[in-house]
Length: 182
Image (cartoon, rainbow, N blue to C red):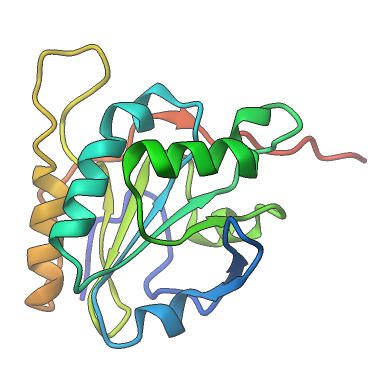
């Protein structure tokens, strides 16, 4: 299955474990089991995420047969709103009932090739990547409606085991990488 993945070499849902907002370890592969899955790199402070977070919660509740994950990989030293207390507030505000995971080491973001928030990765039930990119064409403070056209199209493609190539690259706030000390 060949897809335009906008610069990532990731082809399958990695078998990684991350803590959720309560500190419990969640395995992406085990939680996804034999279901389609969506991983979105997210955070609390980003206006791009804030503009779509409620719509994302609505879609996740509508597609309850899909394994949904949000992952925050931001450096909380530089962005304290993206630490666990802020993420809990965001999850409640957006009505997210799916696992919100913390990638403190930033290794998972690097493995995915994630570059911004929100950055969506959609996988079929065999854990193969069918789409990586934006939820839709809407942007904060723009008149365009948040229709989730690319996310919904990718979910349909995942159910049919085909690539979704009509999307757009993710756009948002860059992931806040930790300062590398020599």
